Image (cartoon, rainbow, N blue to C red):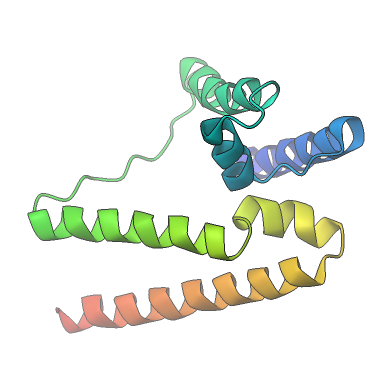
Length: 139
């Protein structure tokens, strides 16, 4: 629980520092898209490398991170690919991802972010409820 609290504080602090120093929003999908698009990699690549580097440092320091099991069937792998594509499409259509809308947008009192967060939280709750029902039923 303390690790989650510390992680949340660090995420909030980094979002604040980015907005205060660069005037930029720390939305990962937007940063990644712009870095891959080539429109402005200057600060974006070090930021993205810092995300990977931070996880590497945590694991190197002995942090135990949960690892999801890879599905053994081609249907399971196909579901992961489709899910990833849907998440990518949703972040483009919604002009941002959970970090951009949830952390940065809500803190700026953005109405668009409030709607986005409400919609993706509702979709997550419905999906988890439906999947749990299917798993309990043995489907």
